Length: 199
Figure: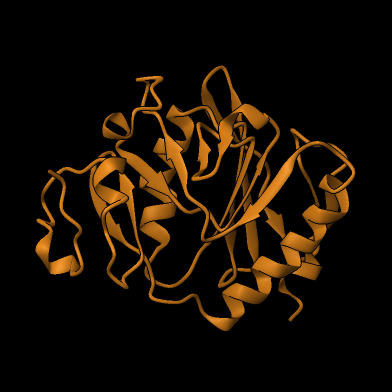
């Protein structure tokens, strides 16, 4: 019989877990699972992080409110199937909470969130989480065939966009504060990058 976990210290940090385990965790710390391994998230994003998230969300909403695609902001569970193509909770070993994501295939949506790759994922870097976004999540999103992945770097005032081509992410020219940002997958999604960083 599965047991509710109320304290993160009850978990083995070197252990391997599944989404079925994740559903039993009722502690205050925010965590993600990447290939069965626990990754702690920041207790609460900074004010700057939240402002940037809402600025981008408003730009996305202008485009996607007129379409059948759905936009979500964190916390929103995205379960990635790691090639098993299974909706069995005990087989899913990656659960992430992207800052923003867009999902156009409604078959991927259920009451728990999303199962399978969103079409667009946007992650906003915070001091201390850049390794996770630039390395672990990059590989995970590429393997699961996320069509487009943005990494927003507030410290450098830059946005990196990666587009899936032949199952590999290809990086576009970095978007700087003075550039026009345009999605490759959603051409109507375009806006001046300055609005993101001009806080």
